Image 1 (spheres, rainbow, N blue to C red):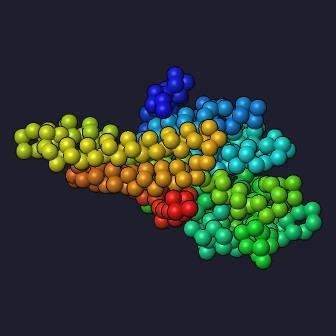
Image 2 (image 1 turned 30 degrees about the vertical axis):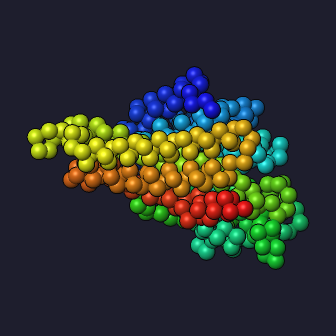
Image 3 (image 1 turned 90 degrees about the vertical axis):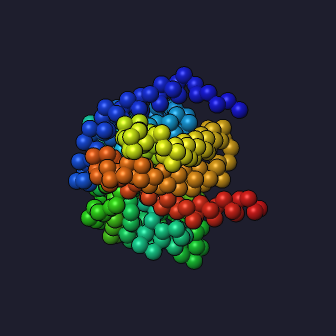
Length: 384
């Protein structure tokens, strides 16, 4: 097993780190407070080729491997997880799903601009619409319907907690066509935001990742052409599950970055802050906290890279991506909480950033499959 990153991977890691520090750090506290979507940063990421990192160049992407994607997500998440989640959804869920399962017409029409992050000079990103008011962890309970009308579907229903909800130009929507078939009656449809009958709800006022725009999306008699169905009739649920397995690598990497960012700030602070006549890094209780942080973060990083390596090598990465997500997300929450503790009273104020890391970390245990769901996936795999 090779633990050394390639020269290209190191270059991508550095480029992401430099971008995060120079472009994401300025204004990150203000964006969080005002729930301001990082449009400028996302546009710049598109120029760097980071909005379609794993998409083949023939479809407008950068043609990078998943390991490079993990490295980039981690570096950006060290500074601003709101930026990284927008990037993750467009890469892992929308672009990857279209490239893997879309037909050639769908790829040319939608994947090319999604991978480039722009169309006609304007920002062009996607969103993944699975969750509903009564279908969260139980994704089979889809109430959104796609009634077969011959040459088109008539789409009705509501989707919740949609990242990029208002900023996206295109949605990948899971909807039930034949309820009698259960999950086998679900289809995945490509829906354009500006079509008649599509309504974007109010922005959610969230605990963390407040810069990302999270909305409910409502559909009222939206006509979706049959050519916008991804895969065969009834493939929608399988499409969602296969796509989410890769998406979990992105969220695990986001959690890893949040943990790494909190740890690096804590390490720096421990060398500057004095208590009882010496820098707090000399107190064993702080040393042990930092040691545990570093160990858990390294374990999380290896889990993320292993899942990415399996994906790049065409192996089944369902188990490894769930392991990476559950461990990295819990590491992020624990590390960020300990970072606040190390900072003491300063950790509780915004200018020191760690309170934001703590708020941002929590969602990584919830979206794209809760920690409880990941444990179901893991236990089913190991108990076969």
